Amino acid sequence: MRLLDKYILKAFVGPFLFGVFAFTSIFIGTGTLFRIAQYITEYGAPLLLVMKAFILALPSIVILTFPMSVLLASLMTFSRLSSTSEIVVMRAGGLSFLRLAMPVYIIALIISIGAVAFNEFVVPRTNHMYQSIVREEIMKNASPQTQDHIVLKTMNGDDLGTLMYAKHYNSETKELSMITVQQFGEGGKLQQVENADSAVWNGQYWVMHNGIIYDISAGNGVERTMRFKEQSLPIKSAPKDIQQDQRKPEELTIKELRHQISAYKAAYTNANKLEMEMYQRFTIPLASFVFALVGAPLGLQKQRSSSSIGFGISILIIFIYYGVMTFAGALGKGGALPTMLAALIPDTLGIIAGLYLNWRVSK
Image (cartoon, rainbow, N blue to C red; front, side, top):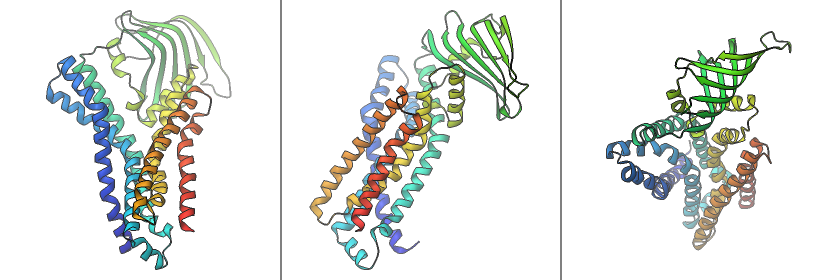
């Protein structure tokens, strides 16, 4: 790494860390603190338990600040270099803007890749631990009587064994309704599908009523069917475990989201919301790289006074980006656009804008 690259990266790191701290503080102050106060005042939760929940909530907040912090750091880095005329000296020495911005773009790409990994291996687990503490220790299992979209599964080693979807669950009557069960064989190959009107807990296991079995294990498109009045459900979860096993999309890894999507689609249930969540696990972290492409050329101003204009524009870009993301996400969830396309729209527009800004300042 050249000395110049180290110099630019050193100028970038400080504002980036400041941005993470500042934006995290804003998110905490505008949402998390109110929930924490509610746990203490309404549920009488102990302070240590609330602090544990607060710490577990932090990863999901911090991950959202990375793109904004990269934008702020990119802007401030090149704004400072421009205001002190260092950028003029560097470019007079034959260095192009793209070459000067390259270390920032590379570190932004690394941050994006790291954010994807953090979003996959850390955030879902801490979110689940947070929800478990809130549900079981703070709210004392104050679960609703009925729940929709129940998904349960069993594993055969690393492969999926059984995947069950129920449209409704009534905890008072211990009844599941509108059930679809997928049975998988070796290598995760689908072998059998069972549909049933309902399943009732008899004290030991679940009994399905009025259903049909589709046996497709023979392959070659051959399908055998068998109707039944009663059949045991191949899921061992007791009623008390069902609600505890249900996780919100933000508590699931990408692999688990795929399982959920498969269960929804097998039951002909709309899975657009889950698909948007899965694709945004990649596109939101990628925004760090997108914002670097936008922030670096915006910070390259000829006059010191114009840096504040660039900062204002960058803040506007944040609102535009998340506004477009929200609008496109609504279109994707509603089925007006394919979910993958809807998830890609904000980053695609950001990359186009960033490339244009880079081209303009490089002339």
